[in-house]
Image (cartoon, rainbow, N blue to C red):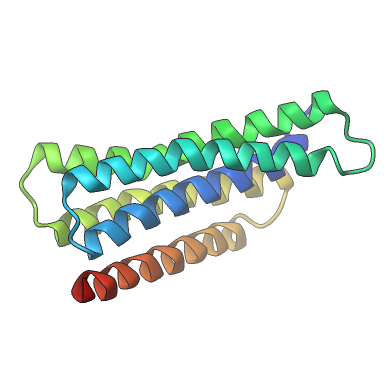
Length: 164
């Protein structure tokens, strides 16, 4: 079996993992929730959403023609691994940055955004390499989706943080 079989699961899990986890971090920073809340929400999201994504991949794979339960389970495991691997990036970046210096939340968010952007670029490159698609197009597409999602989450955090 080649890795091409898992391109969908790797991309799906990795993209959702990094984007949703970073969106939680960005939204919590935008809402000024504090370090403890950011870590709790981030890791809760990482583990629960990772499981949910893997289960969803398994269930959707078993509905495809010609996909047996064993292959569906492999797809689900690839989704889970990719989700957790890429989803850890925003949390580790945030933890690392708050441990090494006393940056403001805004500076921490900017620096974490740079690290997350590098991971999104890597994911776009991996997807393009696996599928044989244009690296430039896939990197830009992946980066754009991540930036938009994080921006929306941060904006909602700012808006709701000011209301409650």
